[in-house]
Image (cartoon, rainbow, N blue to C red; front, side, top):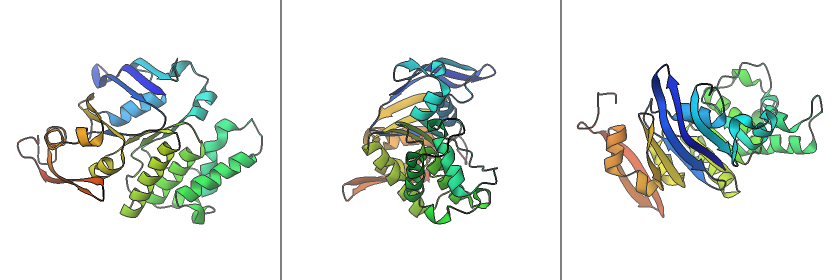
Length: 265
């Protein structure tokens, strides 16, 4: 279980996220949604304990302060996929994915059978097994995104924080990644993903945490959170919504001229 209590992160004197509290349990797929600049990525970094020197409040992992947990122990229990998809190292795809197993390995020890199995499984799940021996730094943006997701999955941590895991992917791979994250949650992991894609959020998530101007404005099932009035107020768009095959669908359809702050809001 991961919990934030009254977390605030500032840029100078201005709060980027302001007194945010939330909880992520194992076995659920939760989406962190909001417009650009809402504080989603900043909050995810605070929850992961990455670059949070200016954070106020507490982040607890299984009831213990995150900043007091041994870093190697934290790395085994909490996997983090950043928004940045840069791969600067001249490593093959399999080698990049294998970096996810470092928290489980002793210094200078060769990969164990479990390490190798986790790497292979992650590559198959993300559809990159066929490019395992290609240099990772020359791949397309979408391929790099799946390689780095595979690295995070290879950790086999009970909690996964993923910042825009479907950004830059084609429609087929967006669906595949969302199905993979949902399967991960059904297998017992807690998954928190920053998403910009309202259609995917409405269909796949167990819970939506909606942010606006650095604060959480709603937290609950997609059917309760992603309602037209709230979408208009937060995103400045009018949606179309319905149900197909027992699953909800939602499309941002028109700019809400009464809500939008600018043509690009």
